[in-house]
Length: 177
Ligand code: GNR
Ligand code: NI
Image 1 (cartoon, rainbow, N blue to C red):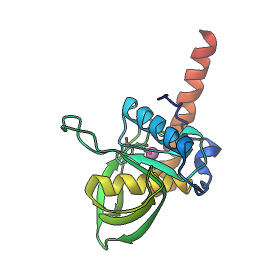
Image 2: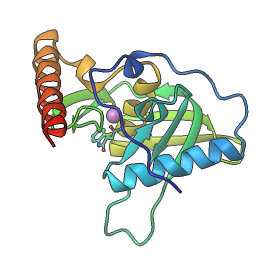
Image 3: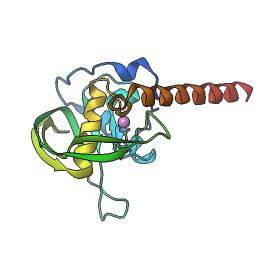
Image 4: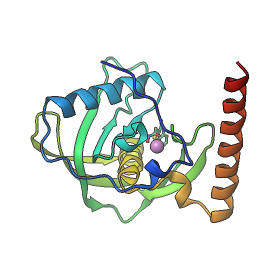
């Protein structure tokens, strides 16, 4: 397994629409496993391929609590929503590509998703609560959408300006050694 660098906003690669996976092969599986390792180390509860600079429709998710007896990772290619509930749930979301910023986002509380798993098999999953929120957050990444795109332009631009400023500071510090 290998750790992958995570891209942070603003970056044009986070704004692109990802391409469907034709077939889940050994290389795709390796990418899924590397994404999971990167996600656990971050730590995070989900990760989408565009966040590691790969423009393919691949996401990984694991919302099981740290003290759970075992992990429950999902590896998904080409996820599509078959159904969403009428009612919304609001979570205070964060994103590994929008470090240190959090905001409430309302999304359908429950979903049914169809995807291709790590064995190239079609599966369906019904999810609610944090799992449903996380899958939708990851699927947004495949459309080039970040959670800050659900906020007002004012709030989004404040966050983007802060991220840019923080990056310039780190870059300057790195250059100075
Ligand atoms: O680690 C993450 N936590 C999180 C919390 C609430 C809603 C969504 C998420 S996903 C995020 C990791 C990430 O950026 N995935 O793209
Ligand atoms: Ni994210």
